[in-house]
Image 1 (cartoon, one colour):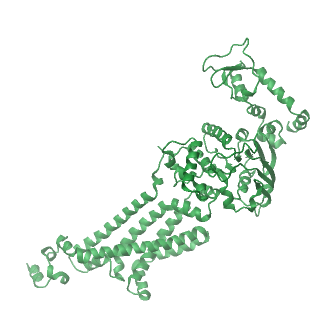
Image 2 (spheres, each protein chain N blue to C red):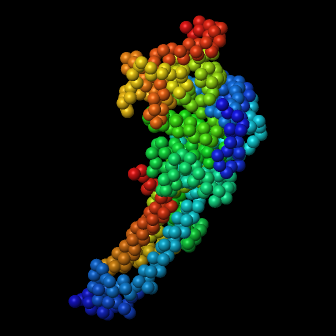
Image 3 (tube, one colour):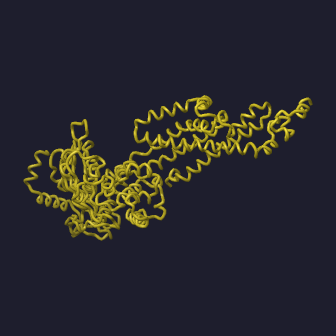
Length: 358
Length: 243
């Protein structure tokens, strides 16, 4: 879904493009501990894609992330950013080229929003006008361009605003790679969903290579172009697209981790816009403006199915943003989707994995 | 009547014999006339000397404390010996310390300042360290992740965030030293301690004691207030709240 020509820069920048990230047999052993924290970890994140590192606590996902910008030294193996080993780089210089966002955000409380965002450009010695222009550009990008916002201190912001400023600070020098450690972990569920959607919209614009750490498989499925599932001891259990992981979990650990409802989760990956809906012939569409059986095209099949179950299995009326009726969603339409997906997946692979998963 | 006659024949206070006014002669509790006559020659110079004694002591003490605190912040093992030594210095009775210094250093400004400086160290080192320690871990993590060097983190993040604690330490130190400097006269006859000491030896006339003591208290309050102002100017973020 991403190619080099879509991975473009969104502003004046020292780093024009997102970069490919490759981990080659990376290990991390701590002195005095028999079990490694990260064991022989290899995967490649194509430029401009979001890779989610997910796993239970103790799986070393944060450690793996911090090896990339060398905040934790690597014991073995190599990490390449844009084809160049990070081990050859001066660590501070490397970190200025990698956006860094953490759960507690870590905004500098004594600096204003504008000064926080300007952190890395200042370290890089950009001229004043260029920094000011970049700060304005980013405030606009994250939707915090109210006139007094730039001069506020972090204590004067809401949790969601702080998180946005944290992301803007990480994006300031237009880095080719962003590291995000549970960035929405401390936000309440409603605002978390909003920030996730916002970040996906932002990512569609800026097209960074992103390594995103979370312990929440639903967040991983939502945010990731690819998901790396880590098991205890920093062993890579599976590295694949969300759809592949939900359809073909590589082993019992992955199947358990994604949950028994992985069939439903897979439905969450498809929106109604991708389905062949039924013409409203003979059936009566729900034409009331805010009717209980009206859903929008961008609703996921999972949510629509849940609504349909609540409505006693009655068909739902699918409308576009303007409220125009696109068609009807019936149980039959969902069944067709499932049989299409079953046909698309190789039956031998499904049979090979299913006995072990049972 | 007898008292008045004695005073007329030979004044109680020989220093001011020429200008003795009636309230001096009668040893009133407070003699305004004496104050206005002695402001120029006695009180104002003493006040200026007192300010200088205190400011120099706190300035030197702050410089030494900053070095000690930064060293203890960088190398954790230095903290215990640093706190131990500065605590011992702080516990030495002031008069004893002046006596101890008088023999090797002499009755001069150096004895006075060495003693005063030694009393600032514990207060300042402790406060600077507490301020540096209170910087949240996630802020340091963010600074490191942004590619700041250790020095950049110290100068741009840790010291600014430690400022409220540092200034709190300076306030305690300056008030303490202004009070303590009134006994510096033991080794160095400057400052507000001199008129206070004179008054103590002069029998019933106490105006000098009241005025000099009052000046010391006022000076401490003004210094404290100035530092509060400095803090408001330097740390605007501490008053920024949502809403």
